[in-house]
Image (cartoon, rainbow, N blue to C red):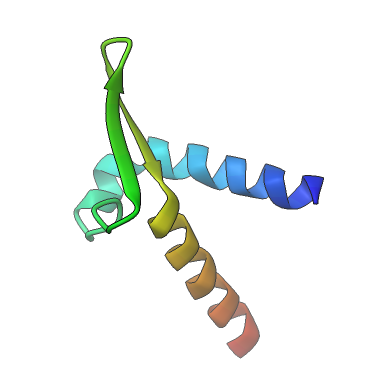
Length: 64
């Protein structure tokens, strides 16, 4: 359970850092991706995009 939680947290941090690049492909603008402004900074929590990309990665790993 702890490993899964760590993987999700690392994925969220990576997606947050790569958001400018991923937005060009529509990732981060799906329903369920939260954006808010706090402490003078824009924060993004791409929950739906993370689930979608995880499913895609699982599908690719099954096929290979």
